Each structure stands twice: as structure tokens, then as C-alpha cells.
Length: 299
Image (cartoon, rainbow, N blue to C red):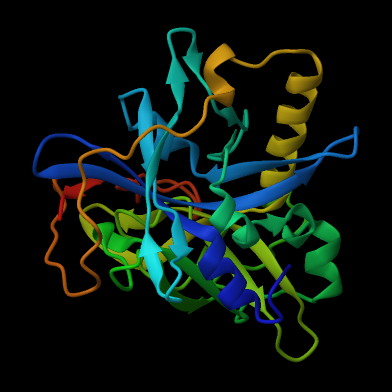
């Protein structure tokens, strides 16, 4: 059931995605869980993230950071591995035009209440009904530099103002800017609105990268409109209806990889590679940057 407070509901639905590079370093991204209704009356849970998060992780499996309540009522970090590519190629479904990916996942029984309904994803009508415009506050969740809010592995909440105008329709303006710094580890996190005068509660989009001009960060994040998450889910359902599903896509999560429990926001982590990129001569929303799915030191 959806929490009355979308912020809390999304905190529960947002998970860390990581992959070990060696004993000391790992690639980190963010994803969130959506329940998709199917024509036969069943539902399917998908993990939504930025497509480059999976693309930059070369190994067949990634670790997803579930959290569950133990019998004493305490949250416990209980990650497990899922397969993202097979010998036949990627196991995720990718939007052909935007940096969005979805992959069906098997969520542990104790974490299934965290999954959010597909209806929480905005579309052009949602933006119009809520009169979304420049200056509106939006929030995002993620794992900047691989950090989590606490040892239970919950994401870190941040907020910024919508820095673009106009933001609709999505066909003309597929991405928009938010006034906050998107750092490695944030890619794939949900960007959302949680009420306010005349505003609704919905996921507005997915954080995909930060804006840079040469070596200078402009403290702006680029967000892909949630309409393209809906579009990617539709592509997945059509592919599944045709039987176009990799054989190993439905495997149960494997045992967790040899990674440590998150140490919270006091953990000292650094990027494994230096930030780089140029943006000169490109319009806002298409800037070359260091994507927020970069590798960071393991904890």
C-alpha cells in the first residue's frame, strides 16, 4: 500500500545498485521499484534506473540492496544479486531514445510492500493538472558517491528547484533541469513532487546526469521525464507478449556478492576516475558530463 507521504514511500522503494570492480572499488547507481499490471490480471515488478548504470557495469550480475524488518522491528540490509546480461546480451529493456532502463526483478517477500504502482509515474497530463513549472521544488533519492543514509542502506534525500521552462510536452522537452548537484551514484534515482498548493504526488522523472561546462560543475541535474519510463515499460510488455524475453531473465536472486553493509553518510568515499567532460556548444539538457553511475571506493 502506498504511504500517505510519497517521500517515505519512495525512500522504501529506492535501492542501491552496485557491482564490485575489485576488492576495494565498486560501480554504484540507484534504482526504484514499480509494479506493472499485465493483461492477464497479474502484476510484474520492475527495477527502473538510468540505462547507463547497467551499461557501465560489465559483469553479468549486479547487487540490489533490499532492506527488510527483522523480528525485533529493526531495518536490516539484505542485498542479493540479479542477472542483467546473458551470453545473448542485455537482460534489461532500454528506451530507444532516452537514458532509461527497466528490468523485471524478483523482490524478496519481506520487501514487496515497498513496490510502488505504475500509476505514480507522471505523464504530460499529470504535469498539466499539477501546473508544474519553473521554480517548483522537486526531490530526489540516491546514493551519492556510494553513500547511504544509514547502515540499513536507505537512500539519501535531496531537494532542488525545477530550473527549466517549459517542461511539457515530453515529446518536445524530454529532459529538464533541477537545481542540485548530481554526483556519481545518483544516476537512476527518482525525481518527484510531494504535494504543495495545487500540486500532486508523483514521480516526475529519473535523474540521469549532472551538467558540466568543461571541468566546472554547474550544480544542475538532468532529469528524463517519467513519460519515458512508462514508454519503456510498454516496450517491455510488448516484447514479453511476443516471447522476446532472455532465458535467464526470470532467475531467482543469487547469494549476495562479497560487499560490506553500508556505513552511512560518514563513510569517506572518492570517485575511482576523475570527473571530465565538455559541454561547450550544446543546449541545456544535452551536456557532456560525468554520468552519476561512476565507480566509487568500496566500504
